[in-house]
Image (tube, rainbow, N blue to C red; front, top):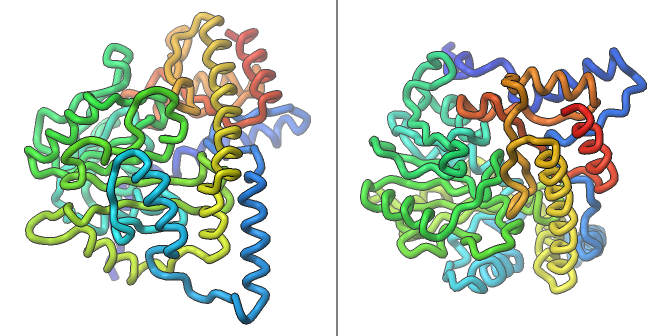
Length: 401
């Protein structure tokens, strides 16, 4: 028997598991510590009332033989696909067919699984810092090469720095696949139409494909594109991923979707058809109850309730940003994003800062080095805790810094 040896190239555990294990060990040593987590991007607000009502109604449907639902359609129920098509795209001037949308159990799954469509010899470009799933999943597929120091030899790194506002330009060397996430996780940077158009133009010119993670688009409050398909030419070069997790609190419900345009063709092959074949083979769809809940997000009541929740988290982000800035730290994000990215003080490494914050302030965040080589010396905090705990956490950190 031969195993996939690429797994042996990875670190033994995932970034957020490391954070959880270190926090758990501290709890054992300090059982009475009042730890506040601004680390993992899990939400704390309850599901919107409209979603709860939809869940209850769908559960009732499942209790009656006349309305019971078995296996869901492979790519999504028409009622959810039409709501997505109308509210997320048509309302912004983007025309999509329903069969270009694929409902999933959360964007994380598809951002990793999309690699099934591509050969192992493709060169992948990633922003740095970057959400670690893009890197780890491609290493698992065999596209990483070897880890030399803290760089994978087969990746092209698009480095984000304070000088470029954590908005790198398209690659200057060959890349077949480019992974983008805007608003960005972890830096909170958001890209404007001109910047995104540069990537679209580059991808079409080089016959490359953009994998565009728009999981945080609902947090955009100014005139930035919510979808890459708002940029002319994107349908021939881009796949987009969306999530209900941070929009409507679905981290525990699990639902999102992926858009693969039929105009996206490489080597005479339709990536839409390939993804449909992949999903119908490897995925059994998302439950009726979950899709009914997701559809409620698009109702007038559900949309208004989601906006209230997003405003709540954005206010938390502003509290974090203003508090750390007043303590003399250089910060990014908060606007258009539920994340705040800041430079570690006094030349500390990211993990040194993690340990200091945990032990001296009982506040948990995420070390920037876990997001890639360029993340060293930076740190990420999330706005997803309660308003009260967010204020308390920043009060503690201001006294620490």
